[in-house]
Image (cartoon, rainbow, N blue to C red; front, top):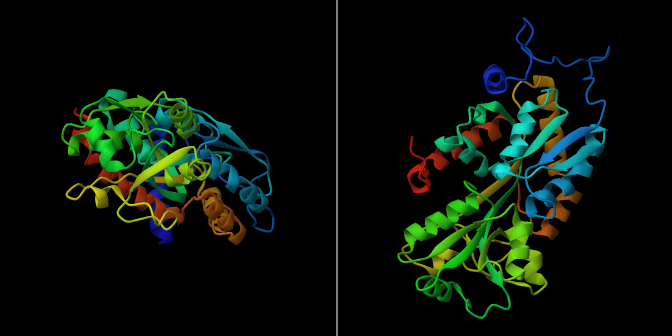
Length: 342
């Protein structure tokens, strides 16, 4: 397995040179930014502050997942981690900044699957970067989308009343941007439910969607379970269904969309993990994988995340890389639905 990982990472480092023109060429030995070790053979990294880039606005589920994890990573790595929220272009402002950074392990970014794929699978984006431009470190959370409305909105008591209303009225649906799993959800619902009139309203993240729902600027929002739980508990939101293959253990009384609408199959998965730019030395990459493994599986951290309604799902190293590639193939199957035609 280690030999396989080394081969995959070597290929990723070569591809990164064409995808990230700002990176320096590796030395003759083929390794860029060779990691240093002490006389005892211990990795001499990290030695300074690390930047953790979050592609979404502060206060949303993705941001919360990072900020809750950061103290555990700091303890394990022994240095401070600065969280930097960089929104725009459906995550790709953040990911472009990551790929421009020196591949020395001091800059890492949250990776959102399937959102990242649309940035290069959509030919209109004209991006040269792709999945091989990144080194996939670890997955932290696997969540499912859900349908939420303002608790004071009397039009939508349940999914069926929502669907009937949406067949005779235009419904403003908030998502996280073009190509995100939330936008795909809107497109998929319009495709599968004949006559449904959902209009996409792009937001920078769940925090913005939440505000828009409460302000009456949009009719429905697609949040993840972890993002919406607090609003439901506070009585501000009403959760109509989850877009998952089965009911969530966090919300056992909330039905799935497919349960309520027999004959339809609409799900909305969302994975949140972490990635480095291609070209990072393998020893540093392995150190990151080990830190993620220890931190995400820390019993105290698990307890905190459960309280937040965040469904942890650790996948690390080469297994996470293989998972990302598999999900990329799934995303490609939506090309026609999304209008991604070359």
